[in-house]
Image 1: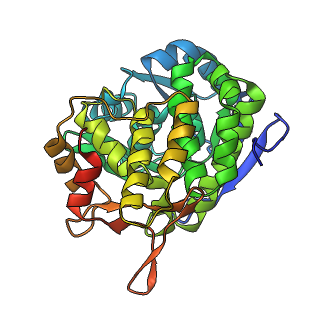
Image 2: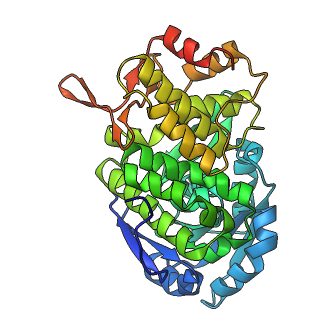
Amino acid sequence: MSRLADMSTSAIRVDVRSTVGRDYPVLVGPGTLRRLPTLLSEHAAAHSYALVGDDRVMDLHGAHVAGVMETLGRPVHRLTFPHGEANKNRTEWIRLTDTLLERGMGRDGCVVALGGGVTGDLAGFVAASYLRGIPVVQLPTSIVAMVDSSVGGKTGVDVPLGKNLVGAFHPPRFVLADTELARTLPPEERSQGLAEAVKHGAIVDASYMAGVEAEAHGLLAGSDPATTRMVVRSVEIKAEVVSRDEMEGGLRQILNFGHTLGHALEAASGYRLPHGSAVAVGMILEARLGEMLGITEAGTAERIRTAVAAVGLPVEPPAGLSLPHILGLLSRDKKARGGEVRFVLLKRVGEVFSGEDGGAPAWSHSVPSDAVARVLDGV
């Protein structure tokens, strides 16, 4: 099909299986925030709650969300940190955990992450490490968090040597994606999140990628029906993958398509290159890499390039980045094995290449460094 599947814009539930924690639901739709008190009581009852968000999101939504939570009659501590990827770091993790200690939150507390991917990762890691682990709930407000980062339980912080190199698997008790909270996002921020939707189509569902491309105008304009359809399908895809391989020992690696080079470009730019833009360029470059190696069907990189451009994302890396710096960052990628960088490669749009490793399926593959350098030549 050429468009996203039709569905009601009422709340839609997708369940995620977990072996690390308990199974948890993801609820998607406009106005679903009204269900927050009931969901907290059912899935994350606590003596007190810590509502964590960056300064921008807390200014927009903090008072309203805290007010909804306070109907439970429990204390709600609001914790704010400066916005931006550069603040997803150990310094802010220390400050937030120290604040919880100062306020006396015990193991019967719960962290509620309100915001985008940075907030979900940072607040999730606070919850994973505080008093050896307390529950976390994800309330994503950005498209990237709704379609991807809030689901799957990955938490962590960035360090000078790369993204997400310190963290933990800590699944949420539930995810509540109220698409009305994303209405305040400008088109360029929506565009950043759509990189992950294009990725989901590229690895699993070619018709979905075509649908995202066809619906690009409505998605960038903030159409509720289009946004809900897109978020639900991406959550379905990610939930299916994560439920089969939560700890990224095999199949879940396919979700890293575009991220190996994308993370390196993002870090090499000093995080001036936004995450979605970095992943968009990374997908095109990794598809080119697969084509160069004779693994990926010819024309795949161009097909992804077209979809990426349709949702308003860059199709080439920014000028002035250092090739040796990028290659050095790749060598420290958290997905490296035995010192070798590994890449997820496509067979074609909608299908990932699977080789064998000791008789088992291999979803990521070591690639000759000279091939990577050729793909990056001119960056």
